[in-house]
Image (cartoon, rainbow, N blue to C red):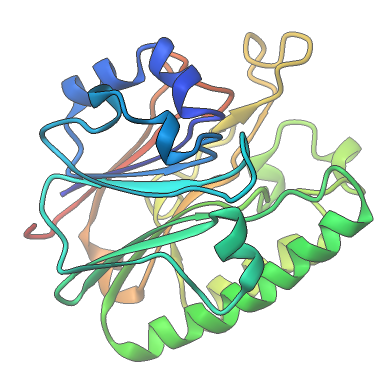
Length: 257
């Protein structure tokens, strides 16, 4: 089972850059998308509803903002697009597809880079998500959470770590939250369970020559329940084409789908 995740930074912009052609060639079983920046009435063209997939969108109420989606080659038993956090519902930050005992979610945690108010909202979201993720672990089901956390976990996950220690996305409190998810709660960072090499980034600023010089951050994750630890077969950050300021993260699982 091939699972992909990608922050599109605008699905219409990514479409113009060849995203749907890549999707048709790559054929992931599931792809989780973040930052649609579009309303459903702006996605009526059939290109946004590829025939090989069941497509589920959760757009933000605010136009041109946030939004998440899941495309699945297999029809899910159900789809959930709410969580116990009103902001996530209004801003389109959570959607989950259920396939029996397997759950796959697309999550877009707020950024705090615009100021203290949004950073406070980000911390609220972290608290709400951790509580929800504890419930998910306790259920005994298999979970794959595809998330743009807007957080780089360790120095290994960000090129300029020294100059970013006081910036949102690499704050001690944010990194400690990921530590708690892994070390206390038991979630697995699927990518790092296979690839522990440096310079593995999934986002690059559009400023300067960040992409060219690989001055990036790894902020896009697939977190899995311990039950899937030994089913992770291969991982990849795809960089041959650019569809947004993020790169697709693809992970192959030994899982009947």
